[in-house]
Image (cartoon, rainbow, N blue to C red; front, side, top):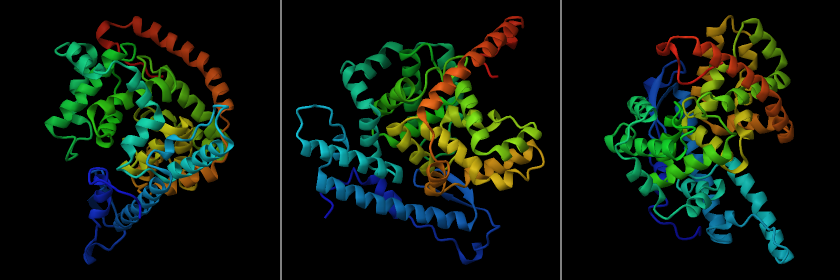
Length: 400
């Protein structure tokens, strides 16, 4: 009914279907913390309600997979690539078909890409396929051979970060996985020496390795993310792009949650305490894995708008609780508890799109330009202060 599906393509979908978690009758108390695994192998903590939500998410994934396979059967397996009709020679029927596909695709991506289809869909829609095709055929392997054995400040930091990247994960803790992660990060540090390596990229690359079918594809997804999807200089040595994004986010938060912002300002709460990790790790350390993947589904198709929406939604969802926080630690703990237990991506994304409403991309672009000069001036001042310090006191990454 849904077309021919190979066992390999269905591997992750089967994982989503295989295990239904059933807490014992003695665990059916909301205040009892239990540990369980999500579909990407991460061990998470929550109460019995969290287990039930995760089971519901698994069912949603199965239902969404059936819809995708049905579309593959009716429209063709690459239907999602037929969304652009710019040629004047195309017939009106083909143009209309492309428009319908584009509308369908946006709706389907907002609802989530099935785990088994993510590798191919991400590569296609993000532009990673084009970037890979434009490079020499053996580019990645040649790059690995060229940098083998070389030691830089970036490779030293990568080696320090590998053991603590999602420590305890049943796959990522293995030597083979850590070797793959190291190769991806080291290769990219040489591909773009201006970026080199920044802490936070290890978590992003690790999740890409879990999703993509090959190490090389994970490399190209990282490349397209840093070079085409995100704004410039997010991972530059001075993190200027990350600082600018946080300034823009703070302005958006003031507009959408003014009462909350007034309260947080009274507490002397700095948004960057939580937002720095969100923008550098793209929520990979903050949200449950499937929720992060759903955010990334949209990120690779629609762009960085979803990063702002996700961050706004987290504050919006707990606004009434956060205005009751007594101090900075209380506020941070409430936010962390919220993010770690957002097991159902639909809860977050419904707020992000339905409640937040329109975020004009032109306004965001103007705000970025406005904040750029202020951020760069502060970073220049920071450099001057650092240059006046003894060498051992200087940090390789500059934070405002």
